[in-house]
Image (cartoon, rainbow over all chains, first blue to last red; front, top):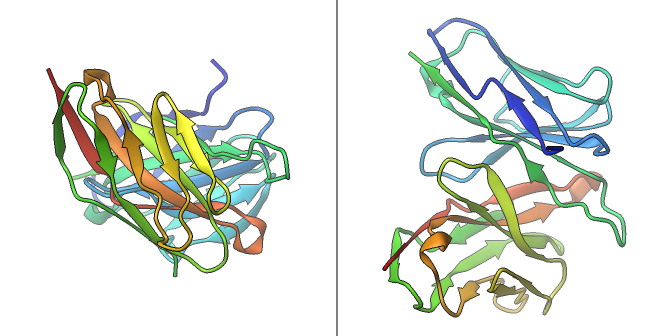
Length: 117
Length: 114
């Protein structure tokens, strides 16, 4: 299977702890996105990378959140000093850049469900 | 800013009934529009898309037409099946600055019964 993968699928942590999630995109995709989805809501954009460069960050991404994509392949999302409000599904997606004919749709991974107790 | 508004669910239908899920949007410029589907226990999957006004996206019997004059992208299917039970998300892509981040609606849960 060459889809987007995320690890772990579930994470339970205590308030105040740090957590890190990993996303492996589809191999030829140079764009990678992170979204957050809370119960009953649609996903909300957090940040995106083109290759290793982080090109945009949402105001939702507080200074406790940091994302990296060091070699332009996999990405990590770290949350420091977790709060109960951080409980959500964290989704990763990847795509090719938009071209006139290209397939630039975003393909999503299964998500990492974070529960902060 | 950009936003997407979907009809609230859950929507419950009998098998073979006609489906419409309403979606309207607010955006600057000319976004692309998408419908994503999330089956129970699975990730988001692209169902269909339309990239410009009057385009019709279609897949698996579902259709949606990009209506710029009414800023709408309603999802329709002529005859639903139990296997269509899922949550459906309308989304638009904001290509400001060269990226194409997605703005989603809140989702509409569809339940199809025998």
